[in-house]
Image 1 (cartoon, helix red, strand yellow):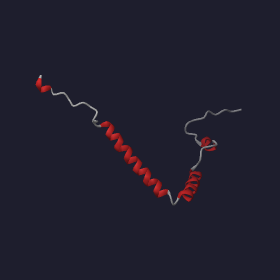
Image 2: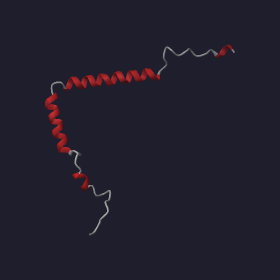
Image 3: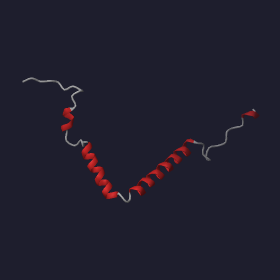
Image 4: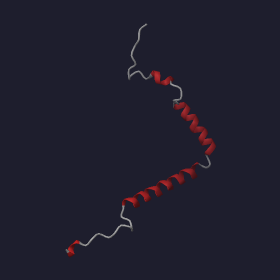
Length: 78
């Protein structure tokens, strides 16, 4: 029996691994999702966009100075 080692260039074996969807399967799943959530999809994407903007605003507030920080000491009076 002749054993040939698996090389990285030989990816044909990866096509038969169960559980890894191909492009056609992903297209079918996307079509089903579009049929189920088609009317609500713009609302969902809009709320997702608003959520991302709010998250970025909150992250920017954390990076900046807060009102709890004491004012910097005046070093010119030393």
